[in-house]
Length: 459
Image (cartoon, rainbow, N blue to C red; front, top):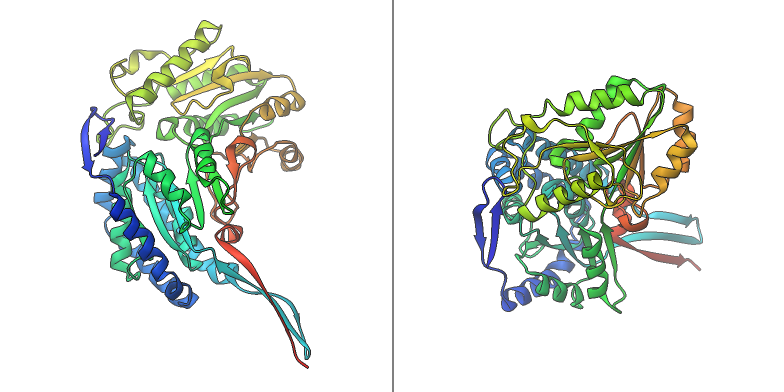
């Protein structure tokens, strides 16, 4: 039995039976059975159906937002942002699909007609996370279906209703039966499905340890996996930046969704000349956050996803403080936070360094560390001193500097004067332990298709 505990008050919010062996077998079989018809459906027809899928999903906006709030604790007044992100990304991929999936012409003349097609991989197994349950799954589900694949979705046990809402929208859109399905699964059956010969590709978003389990389950099979794993994303605040803009945006990048963002800001390196003013600004803005019941419309900082996560975050902060760090945030404004619940007070730590787990390991909570740096070389060295590489950002008024500095940072996405954002027209990817593969942009379609070459000669 799957039980989802809401972090709002640690009570059971959702109960579902895990899929049985027979249900899994039926799901895999029908996915394969419908594959040929779906891949032979024209791209224009697929686009029409996927557009109806998006429209149907958005019609249920209010119900979805409240479910989202209760399942993972995001403030209700921020849940609409996820719906907007879902729509923006889905419609972009629908619009670009024909261009992205078109044939590549190698040679065409009176003698030769040579070209490359982008054929679907087959059945794609998507394992989606709880922290952005719709924004992450849309990155994989929509391009996979547009490319002619069939999809089986396994959502996090924290957000099972998200899979059900997506399936409901798919049914209303006219997607043929078996093209898009979902399963509620435990870890054991998830691994068995990955190892099954009827699965042709796996797309996973989650922890580094989870990514290793996916690779292990694939074993010696010759299939690939797209893995978006951890992050410890850094920012460099240069002395020539618009300081107030940097403070406001980096606070939001650190604390939005209670810091539970793979591309959230966890490390900030500040030029020594503006360090004191930046720290004071971060203290002031952080202490204005309202940590409360996420169903309250005034709340802008909700609980973290579960009690074990809250305890892990608190422990990492305490360890850093025991090793010399200082938390500059006055906690009296956050009385709801207690050791026995999921409400974690925001923390801004100074006097931190890279000997601390807090600055090296993913925290995934409403915390951030700030270090003083003397120059750009020191900033670059510290930003690259990480096992992760999803995003990084610089705050400066000098575009040319930003372009040169960005080339030095080992990361999948580099921002200037922005953070914690996905542009659907840009490739979403990472380096090092952040994983492999690409979603979004026209390049994302390349990872859910395979190349097939045709060489025709007229005699």
